[in-house]
Length: 120
Image (cartoon, rainbow, N blue to C red; front, side, top):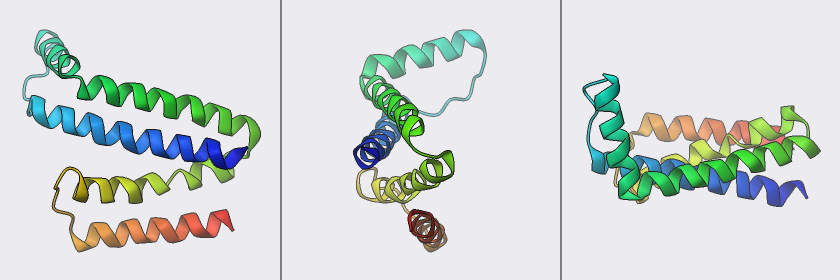
């Protein structure tokens, strides 16, 4: 029961973060943090669809997290969800065409080793 929940949690989290990033890059940088300006940015972001889909995916991830925590220890669930750091780095490189430095890959590898230790 816990493995499918973790797969949904991780998959939906990574998908949501990639979609929101893509959507916000289409909206552009935010320089004005006054309420009216932020509302305009939010409207543009939500109207594009990418951010809306990302938020929906993150909501699925949140509910999968709640379900996972109802059946497993937090000391297991939360470290395993760190796999999202690795998958987000990979998604940034492959899907968003971001330049990922060697230092970032090393950080992702260290996270992967930590996840492996916890899951054993």
